Image 1 (cartoon, rainbow, N blue to C red):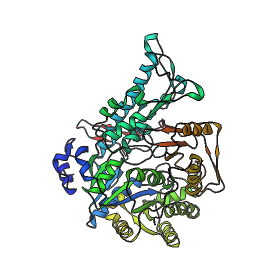
Image 2: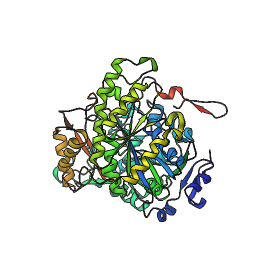
Image 3: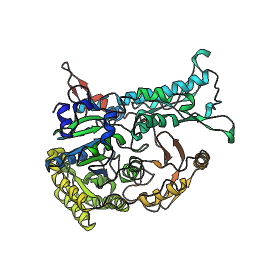
Image 4: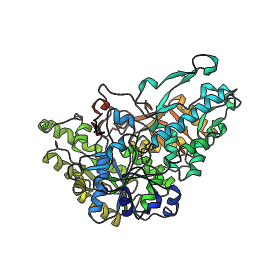
Length: 551
């Protein structure tokens, strides 16, 4: 690996703008960044995907490989990624730093707490929880209705036993008993606010707007915010270093900025706006990963992140794989080289309808997607040929990606097509909705245009939530749709390209600090649990400090 100041030189970042965390990682000074981010120099390439299998289908590997492939063409490229959460690292998915010859380094440190940003987010979040309960204990002068409290505690771990708890048990001096719970830190509104903020003042204002609950009084109730508790200043102070983007590198020395870690199905699912703006000012091409498929991460990136950040999207890559297409066609998600059969080809052909919908989604935004066919060892030549022929029929550009086995060399063809798309195409020129439309209109447009649904049903609770949001004057906020990643619809069992379905809005939450409304479609868990055999069982460290088992 290159020492971090050498990586900085590739981006014309002077050493005085970097605060090193060891040899291989550095924080980029936020104050020094302001003069660099006044205009967009480079092209933004967004990497999204078709509907994945539960194991994921290689967006991170493709993002990293693409940035390295662009550098092999002589372009100055940066990869922008989220920081992995410890919950998934120790749970089902394992590490999130790529794989094979396409990784971000130092991968072990990035997967395991990195520069402490997520710890800082958890501390700021829990400080607000502590100040909230202390306010109630000290007399509750704001008249907060304890049954309306929506601010739970957080920990960066998969811990289902903490989803619902009771706090304040014991003697009178131990607090006032009430129901509470935990969410994973990647789902915290503090994390989302950090990723949306443009600087310390903006961050502090966003933290102050966080709604923790409502006052007593039924129809006359008002929102109680973090600013009412005078918590925002201390919270922002905790986040001082966390607000600064992290500079690292890929396995081939390509610069990588890793900052922020919001979940993709219950939050925005991409890296911070500050990291993207900085990368655009220092590169020819900034390659950004969006969480899950086009119906989740890409839609939120187009409709929310790019609007708030004020930047264009010049090209979009949709990652597809034979494995995921077979899964969407009704097959299993785990295959070996000797499991190919005629039935598998039939399932692959059925699954292509899913790819067609994601192509349609990108075209709706005015972008011609490039399909990156992520190559797995179990893929057959016949399967790859079927996907390529389908892309030709759809008149969509495509390239085989061998980022895992070959690194940047395996993405050179993909990189060439990205350069051509940026030179010949037009940037993002359409969005699903405008912020000023009604909440119901915004929801119904996303369901109809992005999911392909026939309509929307609202529970009584959801309708009540909508009326409350309108009363608070927040209905012009954008939407963050919270739903399953395993289907384009709100039902994880509906594979392929579902048709003839309606989506049910169960409830809505206000993330006033982050600046969006969370629309809950289905039972989306903000605190995951561990599987029967968590990845943590395989992780170890030897006498020399070498960590193993993170995959």
